[in-house]
Amino acid sequence: MAKPLLSYYGDDFTGSTDVMEALASSGVSTVLFLGLPTDATAERFADYRAFGIAGTSRSETPDWMDEHLPAIFEWLKSRGADICHYKVCSTFDSSPEIGNIGKAIEIGRTVFGDQPIVPVIVGAPQLKRYTAFGHLFAAYQDQVYRIDRHPVMSRHPVTPMDEADLAVHLAKQTTLPVALADLATIAASDADQRMDKITAAISGIMLIDVDSAQSQASAGRQLWRAKRQPGLFTAGSSGVEYALLQAWKAEGILGKQPEFRTPGKVERLAVVSGSVSPTTERQIRDATKNGFDGIGVDPLELVGENRDRSIDAAVEEGVTRLKAGRSVVLHTALGPEADRGSEIDRLPGARHQLGSALGIILRRLVERETLNRAVVAGGDTSSHALKELRIDALTTLLPLPQTPGSPLCTAHGNYTPTNGLQVALKGGQVGSDGYFSQIRDGSQ
Image (cartoon, rainbow, N blue to C red; front, top):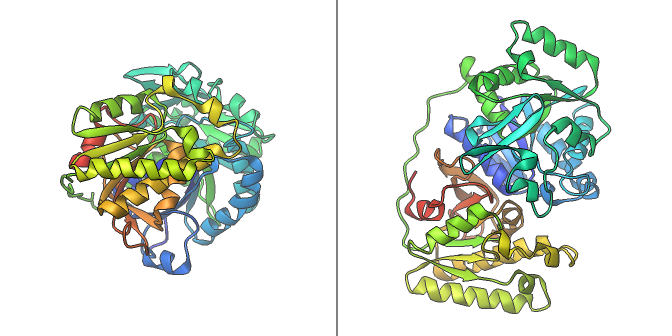
């Protein structure tokens, strides 16, 4: 068997499928485990070139990270891949209290033998995310914004991005020094020497700018050049994979471009959504014009003392619509104006419980109506909802090049109703207005 190229931990489930899609689309066989796999589960995919673990650290505390991440990083390290990646959202939203990226880097750096420098790549032009001289920019509705002025991410309900300078942002989360390999550095004719000089000057984190295909290729070459034993620990968005793919292509590591057959249309699709994003709002409204029934579910009821009764009611309503031949979208909010996050946050652990409740609803719809395709919308929602589907692993069934980061996947596990389920995980900001119809129709 060939040596694994890459291992990774995704800080939420939608971001984890983003990485899997990027790799699989370029011919790197990739499996995503939904937690630390058993030896038997891992053995089923032993010949794959990349493997990941989907996690929840984006919505967790530093104490949670201290308790859970060391064992996960140790397992990833034990696989012997050239690169180990701590994958975060391309909008880099995080805070000292929730989803602390600096803390995760500290833990990974220690596990990988007190690695002197941890490279970080966030820019991913494929996702319309760009970093220039250490500042992050992201697109919304075909316009590019500095992240602290982004109409959505600057107002994120849990981790609003109020700082575009990523070194300043990280300084709030870690005491590790942060250096920058800017666009001028990686484009220089003596880029190798300049990178070596930065690496020798500090022990900590090195941000690498990416704003275009050219800078991405340069960043990927530098990342691959820096690989080490027992593997190079790195952090960042799926921009890490997109950059590495350029380097692997240049070295002839990638095989033949794979072909993915479209799976065709299903008559009924079930969607659960905990997203408050305006992007998801548009997608829900578009879906209800194209064969879907929208079903509003009170999020406070799903996390309150009437939780079981509310879940039962949502399931019965969903089953009724599905039996009538309709697809359904069960949602806890229809856009930011319907966000009840401030009320939810008054209840300890409520956001996790909300995602779990939506997962239970979806599983029961799949069980009762023998559905073979489903969608979970919302990054934080997906991380907790998918655990309720009793799935062990995912592989890519159909990449969606027009909306990268939200592929249709095949589920693997020992639970018959969801083994083989076709499922898509969609982040709040991801996808065109017709995304849900696109998944129902099984088209690219």
